[in-house]
Image (cartoon, rainbow, N blue to C red; front, side, top):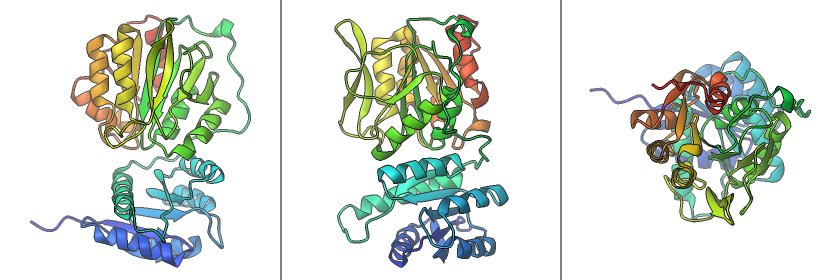
Length: 357
Protein backbone atom coordinates (compact mmCIF):
# COMPACT_ATOMS: atom_id res chain seq x y z
CA UNK A 1 0.00 0.00 0.00
CA UNK A 2 1.16 3.52 -0.76
CA UNK A 3 2.15 5.98 1.92
CA UNK A 4 -0.74 8.08 3.32
CA UNK A 5 -0.87 11.66 2.07
CA UNK A 6 0.55 14.15 4.55
CA UNK A 7 -1.33 17.20 5.80
CA UNK A 8 0.02 20.15 3.81
CA UNK A 9 0.55 23.31 5.87
CA UNK A 10 1.36 26.91 4.97
CA UNK A 11 2.87 28.90 7.87
CA UNK A 12 2.21 32.66 7.85
CA UNK A 13 4.06 34.78 10.42
CA UNK A 14 6.19 37.93 10.21
CA UNK A 15 8.74 36.50 12.68
CA UNK A 16 11.46 34.41 11.03
CA UNK A 17 12.12 32.69 14.38
CA UNK A 18 8.47 31.68 14.73
CA UNK A 19 8.33 30.46 11.14
CA UNK A 20 11.43 28.35 11.75
CA UNK A 21 10.11 26.95 15.04
CA UNK A 22 6.71 26.06 13.61
CA UNK A 23 8.36 24.46 10.59
CA UNK A 24 10.52 22.25 12.80
CA UNK A 25 7.51 21.18 14.89
CA UNK A 26 5.30 20.44 11.88
CA UNK A 27 7.94 18.71 9.77
CA UNK A 28 8.94 16.49 12.70
CA UNK A 29 5.45 14.96 12.72
CA UNK A 30 5.17 11.95 10.40
CA UNK A 31 1.73 12.90 9.04
CA UNK A 32 2.23 16.57 8.11
CA UNK A 33 4.62 18.87 6.29
CA UNK A 34 5.18 22.57 5.70
CA UNK A 35 4.78 23.26 1.99
CA UNK A 36 5.36 27.03 2.15
CA UNK A 37 6.34 29.89 4.46
CA UNK A 38 5.12 33.47 4.21
CA UNK A 39 6.16 36.58 6.18
CA UNK A 40 2.94 38.49 5.49
CA UNK A 41 -0.56 38.01 4.04
CA UNK A 42 0.30 39.26 0.56
CA UNK A 43 3.05 36.68 0.22
CA UNK A 44 0.73 34.13 1.81
CA UNK A 45 -1.87 34.71 -0.88
CA UNK A 46 0.60 33.59 -3.54
CA UNK A 47 1.89 30.63 -1.52
CA UNK A 48 -1.65 29.40 -0.87
CA UNK A 49 -2.54 29.70 -4.54
CA UNK A 50 0.60 27.78 -5.55
CA UNK A 51 0.45 24.97 -2.95
CA UNK A 52 -3.27 24.45 -2.22
CA UNK A 53 -2.65 23.60 1.47
CA UNK A 54 -4.89 21.61 3.79
CA UNK A 55 -4.28 24.01 6.70
CA UNK A 56 -2.95 27.56 7.10
CA UNK A 57 -1.43 28.77 10.37
CA UNK A 58 -1.93 32.53 10.57
CA UNK A 59 -0.47 35.21 12.82
CA UNK A 60 -2.74 38.06 13.89
CA UNK A 61 -0.49 41.14 13.83
CA UNK A 62 1.52 41.34 10.61
CA UNK A 63 2.81 43.99 8.19
CA UNK A 64 1.11 44.91 4.88
CA UNK A 65 -2.27 43.51 5.95
CA UNK A 66 -3.94 42.72 9.27
CA UNK A 67 -4.33 38.98 9.92
CA UNK A 68 -8.08 39.34 10.50
CA UNK A 69 -8.60 41.15 7.21
CA UNK A 70 -6.62 38.48 5.39
CA UNK A 71 -8.70 35.78 7.10
CA UNK A 72 -11.92 37.50 6.05
CA UNK A 73 -10.77 37.66 2.44
CA UNK A 74 -9.46 34.09 2.46
CA UNK A 75 -12.70 32.66 3.85
CA UNK A 76 -14.83 34.54 1.35
CA UNK A 77 -12.74 33.65 -1.71
CA UNK A 78 -11.07 30.33 -0.86
CA UNK A 79 -12.42 28.74 2.34
CA UNK A 80 -9.51 26.96 4.01
CA UNK A 81 -9.02 25.55 7.51
CA UNK A 82 -7.10 28.21 9.43
CA UNK A 83 -5.36 27.87 12.80
CA UNK A 84 -4.77 31.30 14.32
CA UNK A 85 -1.56 32.04 16.23
CA UNK A 86 -2.26 34.55 19.00
CA UNK A 87 -0.64 35.93 22.12
CA UNK A 88 -2.86 35.10 25.09
CA UNK A 89 -3.47 38.61 26.36
CA UNK A 90 -6.72 40.35 27.20
CA UNK A 91 -6.57 42.27 23.92
CA UNK A 92 -5.37 39.24 21.99
CA UNK A 93 -8.24 37.09 23.22
CA UNK A 94 -10.78 39.52 21.82
CA UNK A 95 -9.00 39.48 18.45
CA UNK A 96 -8.83 35.69 18.52
CA UNK A 97 -12.55 35.43 19.20
CA UNK A 98 -13.20 37.71 16.26
CA UNK A 99 -11.06 35.35 14.15
CA UNK A 100 -13.25 32.43 15.20
CA UNK A 101 -16.31 34.42 14.18
CA UNK A 102 -14.72 35.01 10.78
CA UNK A 103 -14.27 31.27 10.25
CA UNK A 104 -10.95 30.23 11.82
CA UNK A 105 -11.13 26.66 13.12
CA UNK A 106 -9.17 27.32 16.31
CA UNK A 107 -6.64 29.56 18.04
CA UNK A 108 -3.43 28.66 19.82
CA UNK A 109 -0.88 30.53 21.89
CA UNK A 110 2.14 31.84 20.02
CA UNK A 111 5.18 29.77 21.08
CA UNK A 112 7.96 31.28 23.14
CA UNK A 113 11.15 30.79 21.14
CA UNK A 114 13.45 31.32 24.12
CA UNK A 115 12.24 28.44 26.29
CA UNK A 116 13.12 24.77 26.21
CA UNK A 117 10.90 23.40 28.97
CA UNK A 118 7.42 22.57 27.78
CA UNK A 119 8.31 22.68 24.09
CA UNK A 120 7.50 19.01 23.56
CA UNK A 121 4.06 19.54 25.07
CA UNK A 122 3.54 22.59 22.87
CA UNK A 123 4.63 20.65 19.77
CA UNK A 124 2.10 17.91 20.53
CA UNK A 125 -0.63 20.50 21.06
CA UNK A 126 -0.02 22.36 17.82
CA UNK A 127 0.14 19.12 15.82
CA UNK A 128 -3.15 18.01 17.37
CA UNK A 129 -4.70 21.37 16.44
CA UNK A 130 -3.47 21.04 12.85
CA UNK A 131 -4.91 17.53 12.58
CA UNK A 132 -8.23 18.82 13.91
CA UNK A 133 -8.20 21.72 11.46
CA UNK A 134 -7.45 19.41 8.55
CA UNK A 135 -10.49 17.30 9.46
CA UNK A 136 -12.78 20.28 10.03
CA UNK A 137 -15.78 21.17 7.91
CA UNK A 138 -15.05 24.79 7.00
CA UNK A 139 -18.28 26.77 7.10
CA UNK A 140 -18.74 30.37 6.15
CA UNK A 141 -20.24 32.21 9.13
CA UNK A 142 -23.69 33.53 8.33
CA UNK A 143 -23.72 36.19 11.02
CA UNK A 144 -21.44 37.62 13.66
CA UNK A 145 -21.82 38.72 17.25
CA UNK A 146 -22.80 42.38 17.09
CA UNK A 147 -21.42 44.91 19.58
CA UNK A 148 -24.89 46.32 20.26
CA UNK A 149 -27.06 44.78 22.95
CA UNK A 150 -29.87 42.80 21.32
CA UNK A 151 -33.51 43.34 22.37
CA UNK A 152 -34.53 41.05 25.22
CA UNK A 153 -37.74 39.10 24.53
CA UNK A 154 -40.57 40.10 26.82
CA UNK A 155 -41.40 37.60 29.52
CA UNK A 156 -45.06 37.83 28.50
CA UNK A 157 -44.16 36.33 25.11
CA UNK A 158 -41.76 33.69 26.41
CA UNK A 159 -42.81 30.03 26.54
CA UNK A 160 -43.81 28.46 29.85
CA UNK A 161 -40.84 26.28 30.80
CA UNK A 162 -40.09 23.81 33.55
CA UNK A 163 -38.70 25.75 36.50
CA UNK A 164 -36.76 22.90 38.08
CA UNK A 165 -34.54 22.03 35.08
CA UNK A 166 -30.83 22.76 34.55
CA UNK A 167 -29.19 22.72 31.11
CA UNK A 168 -25.58 21.57 30.80
CA UNK A 169 -23.65 22.08 27.56
CA UNK A 170 -20.30 20.87 26.23
CA UNK A 171 -18.42 22.04 23.13
CA UNK A 172 -14.93 22.24 21.68
CA UNK A 173 -13.60 22.99 18.17
CA UNK A 174 -16.16 25.15 16.35
CA UNK A 175 -18.06 25.62 19.59
CA UNK A 176 -17.72 29.38 19.98
CA UNK A 177 -20.00 30.05 17.01
CA UNK A 178 -22.21 27.03 17.73
CA UNK A 179 -22.76 28.26 21.28
CA UNK A 180 -23.58 31.75 20.06
CA UNK A 181 -26.25 30.39 17.73
CA UNK A 182 -27.72 28.03 20.31
CA UNK A 183 -27.64 30.29 23.36
CA UNK A 184 -28.94 33.38 21.56
CA UNK A 185 -32.09 31.39 20.77
CA UNK A 186 -33.00 30.89 24.44
CA UNK A 187 -35.50 33.30 26.06
CA UNK A 188 -34.83 35.19 29.26
CA UNK A 189 -36.88 32.80 31.42
CA UNK A 190 -34.84 29.73 30.45
CA UNK A 191 -33.59 27.63 33.40
CA UNK A 192 -29.90 28.01 34.33
CA UNK A 193 -27.37 26.93 31.70
CA UNK A 194 -23.82 25.79 32.49
CA UNK A 195 -21.30 25.62 29.64
CA UNK A 196 -17.91 24.00 29.21
CA UNK A 197 -16.14 25.16 26.04
CA UNK A 198 -12.54 24.01 25.58
CA UNK A 199 -10.75 27.36 25.48
CA UNK A 200 -7.59 28.97 26.92
CA UNK A 201 -8.15 30.69 30.24
CA UNK A 202 -7.53 34.22 28.97
CA UNK A 203 -10.26 33.78 26.37
CA UNK A 204 -13.25 32.73 28.46
CA UNK A 205 -14.03 36.08 30.09
CA UNK A 206 -14.00 37.84 26.72
CA UNK A 207 -16.10 35.03 25.27
CA UNK A 208 -18.69 35.34 28.03
CA UNK A 209 -18.85 39.11 27.57
CA UNK A 210 -19.39 38.75 23.81
CA UNK A 211 -22.14 36.18 24.33
CA UNK A 212 -23.79 38.47 26.86
CA UNK A 213 -24.22 41.06 24.10
CA UNK A 214 -26.27 38.76 21.89
CA UNK A 215 -28.24 36.64 24.37
CA UNK A 216 -31.49 37.41 26.17
CA UNK A 217 -30.11 35.54 29.17
CA UNK A 218 -27.33 37.03 31.31
CA UNK A 219 -23.99 35.44 30.41
CA UNK A 220 -20.96 35.51 32.70
CA UNK A 221 -17.77 33.62 33.40
CA UNK A 222 -18.55 31.31 36.31
CA UNK A 223 -17.08 31.94 39.74
CA UNK A 224 -17.04 29.47 42.62
CA UNK A 225 -20.18 29.16 44.75
CA UNK A 226 -22.73 31.01 42.60
CA UNK A 227 -26.34 29.90 43.22
CA UNK A 228 -27.91 28.73 39.94
CA UNK A 229 -30.62 31.11 38.73
CA UNK A 230 -33.01 31.06 35.79
CA UNK A 231 -32.07 33.50 33.07
CA UNK A 232 -28.35 33.00 33.68
CA UNK A 233 -25.65 31.26 31.64
CA UNK A 234 -22.41 30.28 33.41
CA UNK A 235 -19.29 29.78 31.24
CA UNK A 236 -16.54 27.62 32.71
CA UNK A 237 -13.32 29.64 33.08
CA UNK A 238 -10.44 28.26 31.05
CA UNK A 239 -8.38 27.45 34.15
CA UNK A 240 -10.88 25.32 36.12
CA UNK A 241 -13.33 22.45 35.94
CA UNK A 242 -16.96 23.54 36.40
CA UNK A 243 -19.43 21.33 38.25
CA UNK A 244 -22.71 21.56 40.15
CA UNK A 245 -22.86 21.12 43.92
CA UNK A 246 -25.54 21.49 46.56
CA UNK A 247 -24.87 24.06 49.27
CA UNK A 248 -27.32 25.19 51.91
CA UNK A 249 -30.22 23.65 50.04
CA UNK A 250 -29.30 25.41 46.79
CA UNK A 251 -27.64 24.24 43.61
CA UNK A 252 -24.41 26.18 43.09
CA UNK A 253 -21.41 26.33 40.79
CA UNK A 254 -18.15 24.77 41.88
CA UNK A 255 -14.72 25.41 40.38
CA UNK A 256 -11.60 23.35 40.94
CA UNK A 257 -8.19 23.12 39.35
CA UNK A 258 -7.83 19.37 39.55
CA UNK A 259 -5.96 17.32 36.99
CA UNK A 260 -7.15 17.51 33.36
CA UNK A 261 -9.80 14.98 32.36
CA UNK A 262 -9.69 13.70 28.78
CA UNK A 263 -6.67 16.03 28.44
CA UNK A 264 -8.88 19.04 29.19
CA UNK A 265 -9.46 21.48 32.02
CA UNK A 266 -12.27 22.45 32.02
CA UNK A 267 -13.64 19.07 30.95
CA UNK A 268 -17.19 18.42 29.79
CA UNK A 269 -17.27 15.05 31.58
CA UNK A 270 -16.74 16.76 34.95
CA UNK A 271 -19.80 18.97 34.44
CA UNK A 272 -21.94 16.15 33.04
CA UNK A 273 -20.95 13.77 35.85
CA UNK A 274 -22.09 16.32 38.45
CA UNK A 275 -25.40 16.73 36.60
CA UNK A 276 -25.89 12.96 36.59
CA UNK A 277 -25.17 12.73 40.32
CA UNK A 278 -27.27 15.65 41.53
CA UNK A 279 -30.00 16.35 38.96
CA UNK A 280 -31.21 13.11 37.41
CA UNK A 281 -34.43 13.83 35.49
CA UNK A 282 -34.02 17.57 36.06
CA UNK A 283 -31.03 17.76 33.71
CA UNK A 284 -30.98 18.50 29.98
CA UNK A 285 -27.68 17.72 28.26
CA UNK A 286 -26.47 19.29 25.02
CA UNK A 287 -23.27 18.28 23.24
CA UNK A 288 -22.02 20.37 20.35
CA UNK A 289 -19.22 20.32 17.77
CA UNK A 290 -15.74 19.30 18.90
CA UNK A 291 -12.84 16.92 18.41
CA UNK A 292 -12.46 13.87 20.64
CA UNK A 293 -14.88 12.24 23.06
CA UNK A 294 -14.97 14.52 26.11
CA UNK A 295 -18.53 14.54 27.46
CA UNK A 296 -19.67 11.24 25.93
CA UNK A 297 -19.21 9.09 29.05
CA UNK A 298 -20.66 11.79 31.31
CA UNK A 299 -23.67 12.19 29.03
CA UNK A 300 -24.30 8.45 29.14
CA UNK A 301 -24.29 8.60 32.94
CA UNK A 302 -26.75 11.50 32.70
CA UNK A 303 -29.07 9.44 30.52
CA UNK A 304 -28.87 6.50 32.92
CA UNK A 305 -29.83 8.93 35.72
CA UNK A 306 -32.91 10.09 33.79
CA UNK A 307 -31.80 13.22 31.91
CA UNK A 308 -32.79 14.13 28.36
CA UNK A 309 -29.86 14.62 25.97
CA UNK A 310 -29.45 16.25 22.58
CA UNK A 311 -26.47 16.07 20.22
CA UNK A 312 -25.61 18.29 17.27
CA UNK A 313 -25.90 16.53 13.91
CA UNK A 314 -22.92 15.87 11.65
CA UNK A 315 -23.93 18.20 8.83
CA UNK A 316 -23.80 21.32 11.03
CA UNK A 317 -20.67 20.41 13.06
CA UNK A 318 -17.27 21.89 12.29
CA UNK A 319 -15.86 18.67 13.76
CA UNK A 320 -18.23 15.75 14.37
CA UNK A 321 -16.22 14.17 17.15
CA UNK A 322 -17.79 14.74 20.57
CA UNK A 323 -21.42 14.43 19.39
CA UNK A 324 -20.55 11.30 17.42
CA UNK A 325 -18.87 9.70 20.44
CA UNK A 326 -21.91 10.43 22.61
CA UNK A 327 -24.32 9.10 19.97
CA UNK A 328 -22.35 5.92 19.35
CA UNK A 329 -22.46 4.85 22.99
CA UNK A 330 -26.19 5.52 23.27
CA UNK A 331 -26.01 8.70 25.35
CA UNK A 332 -28.08 10.88 22.98
CA UNK A 333 -31.88 10.86 22.79
CA UNK A 334 -32.15 13.28 19.89
CA UNK A 335 -29.82 14.35 17.04
CA UNK A 336 -30.53 17.96 16.05
CA UNK A 337 -29.23 20.41 13.42
CA UNK A 338 -27.64 23.39 15.15
CA UNK A 339 -30.21 25.96 13.88
CA UNK A 340 -32.97 23.95 15.62
CA UNK A 341 -31.15 23.13 18.87
CA UNK A 342 -32.65 25.94 20.97
CA UNK A 343 -36.11 25.16 19.59
CA UNK A 344 -35.83 21.46 20.52
CA UNK A 345 -34.51 22.18 24.02
CA UNK A 346 -37.37 24.60 24.62
CA UNK A 347 -39.89 22.11 23.24
CA UNK A 348 -38.68 19.51 25.74
CA UNK A 349 -38.83 22.02 28.60
CA UNK A 350 -42.39 22.88 27.57
CA UNK A 351 -43.36 19.24 27.94
CA UNK A 352 -43.66 18.43 24.26
CA UNK A 353 -43.18 14.84 23.16
CA UNK A 354 -39.61 13.53 22.94
CA UNK A 355 -38.23 12.55 19.54
CA UNK A 356 -35.78 9.80 20.35
CA UNK A 357 -33.25 8.44 17.86
